[in-house]
Length: 467
Image 1 (cartoon, rainbow, N blue to C red):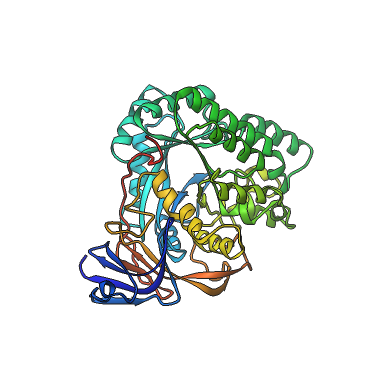
Image 2: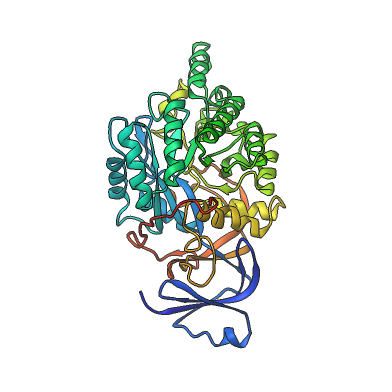
């Protein structure tokens, strides 16, 4: 990779600054920034010049929660690493952290190797892995230390899905104690799966089979209870905790309380909880199945507290939990029984644009947009300042963003390998124009110019918010 690129005349936005600056890129990295139209900037020379006048120049998005090719509910997520990372690039995301899965009875290493095999040579943008721990035992705990050493520094556990990914409190405590020693970060799916299964069984027995009942049985109180329990277990273990896909007012309150106590507890939410609601789950003719994910969509009144949490930093990250299943043939597995609908929504392509719309709507500032979508996820998962910012030495993962372009979100025009959009017909202001990944143009003025195999595996250091 050779050659130099200069990006001229744009408004460079990071989590901390906004400056009209020219950006010089050399050998895949940011080489220098200089205020536009100054002698320093005019001295930048390059083979390729990108005119960013009237545009934002922002770091590529870091989506720290995706599930490409995930086996779930008797089927597989419909995006491969090739289609999913290409769609990510179209949406201005240049790094994804996906979840490798340990199956019960198998080692962490087997799961990690399997995911490396799926991803290697297929990704359009850079990628890393978290490890889903489904089977905590003495061998697993030893393997956690080895994985941290080689750059897989976060481990996901589930208080949900008994019989699939579920861990009990004892297993969770042991994994947390281990991460307290090795510097890893436990990511928690916080829902009381044992109680939810009782409510599912009772709802089906009453003949309540439609998609909307998915939201009704997965009660906000059971998310809050599990969030509280996870926080206290982490406190007992002396470990940090990152709670994934927070969807409910009551769960945000648990995180806020823990943070007020000075505990190293972090929270993530997703665009679906900020923009969609139980109104979508209740759409007629089984259309609601499109919106079945866990944690579930909540009534609209929860949205205000999620936005507030993002503003007050009680929630730090917005990731997608991108886990797409086609409506035809996949979501339809749950016709007549909501519990058989594969859980997950497509969203990796929409996140940066939806969050820009939140800037337009006044929910967050421009810098906070970059903070929650780029910088904080990079710091949280040990990739900063290589990823998540525009500063000399950083990877040249850069998006030229047109803040005035208007678009209508639709499955007809998106690039995710799924037959519907969760945001069909939604009008957005702002659109990705050009995307560089390590200095190479992946999207060039709304044309895909990348290729499978450009994206490389990115080992990570430990969470950069901890001592």
